[in-house]
Image (cartoon, rainbow, N blue to C red):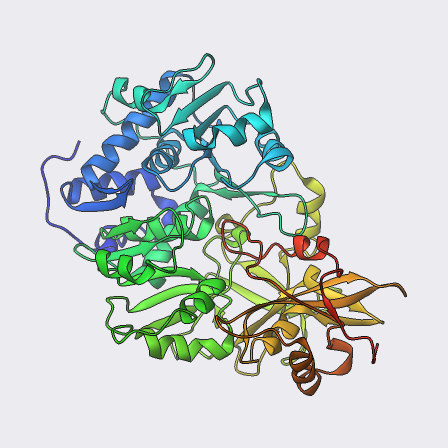
Amino acid sequence: MCGGEREPVNLFTICERYEHPQHVSLAALLRERACVQPDAPAVFIDGGWLTYAALIEQTFRAANALAHRGIGPGDRVGALLPNTGAFLAVWLAAAELGATFVPVNINLTGETLRYIVQHADLSALVVDATLLASYAQAFGEDHPARLVIVAGDEDFSRPGMLNFARLLREAPPEPPPLLPILPEHPALIIYTSGTTGRPKGVVLSRAAQLAHGWYYGKDFVRVGPGEASYTCLPLFHVTSMGFTLGTLLGGGRIGIDARFNPFAFWERVRQFEARIFPYVGAMIGTLLGRPERDDDATNPAQRAIGSATPADMWEQFERRFGLTLIETYGQTELGSLWMMPPPEGARVGTVGKPAPRFRAIIADRDGQPLPPGEQGEILIQPFDPLLMTPGYFRDEATTAHAFRYPGWYATGDIGVQDTDGFFRFCGRLRDFIRRRGENVSAFEVERVALTHPAVREAAAVGVPSAVGEEEIKLCVVLHEGMAFDPDDLDRYLRRHLPRFMQPRYIQRYDAFPRTATQRVQKFRLVEDGVAEAWERRRRG
């Protein structure tokens, strides 16, 4: 396939011959990378390293096995898989075959899992053996796809279900025919986490999938042959997918763990000699909450890329761990269209400025631009529409609402732009609490609560009020060893928040319920009600 091993090169030695990511395919670039450095380590997963040659052979075997059973362009292939080699094989095999890959959150059960799999209308579904109980709970004796394949158990055998390890062994390792590029065809359908409603299937094109990895490598990861990155975020989420592709396209190596473990996190960073890792905001507070060590700053990480860092923890985290936080803003729908620190540098408390691939405005309720300093909805306009979602799978109403302003995507997020062009994220539009005629930003209540010395995490939600609209319930997780004193916290909030933003209820949690991507499931905090909460009765 390769015509002999060649000298290792950086990502952009390969890519600069192409004017734009959509002028080449992901499959072609990964094949070329495996030709350039077949024996170099590519991925640590399932407890061991895969070289680039082994990774591409596994991809070819998976593609040939699926193709032999009728999977091809336009088919949808689902994966109910944790961070395993099987996930990588199915994901990259779908790219080889022109199929649409549909990763499914492994923490889903019951009706939500059934809804997503049935809504996606899959031709094939690959399920990890450890998740068969969830699968059975959701589907009983029925199979939701023509092909159901079980991974993670080489001895597995059950009528109506195929064994993934056996399929790989029996499939030929030769490359399948390289397909035309077809940049506008769907590559991914990624269902949103469903923290506020039914999950929606975000469609991303082949151009968007490749651009996501391409620009992750160019803008953030920036590791080449002999260099390493690390992720413990789930591969079924767009962040870890883009981060992984950014490493592989550059020829680096990536260590992938199954989940975030705050007790072992820095040891894994050191073990992999990782220069960069992705994070979500909750990880920042959790890692800061661990006991300090003399060697905290002597780790190989130089950068971390993520979002939702509490402003008061930003510089403290950088100093303690000796790295730079790259705070960004993005959505699954946006692919590589993220806001990021501009060349002149980051500004604490902001998400930077739009990348060169799009423009953004803060808009009023009619979609009209607002002046600097005024709060409104963030609207996005890509210069190349292929790099952003065209809409939601089989959901015309939600698609029409998101694109209700011609040429613009309405994010549903609230932000502010300053006079220098920096954007600040202020929360979800649906995360505003309606209290006595005022719109209260949960994000702002949380931001102030996090400045209290006892509070490690905060989440503000609206709960029903006896007089109509909502009251504010503040949920908090405390730093280790701190006592819960709601009266003290209430006095603190009264000094720092306007009256209409002050919570009526405060409730302590040992830990917040979260999605697999570490987002707080606020609907569950609302469902908890106020029976166990402290209530400020005196002032209304």
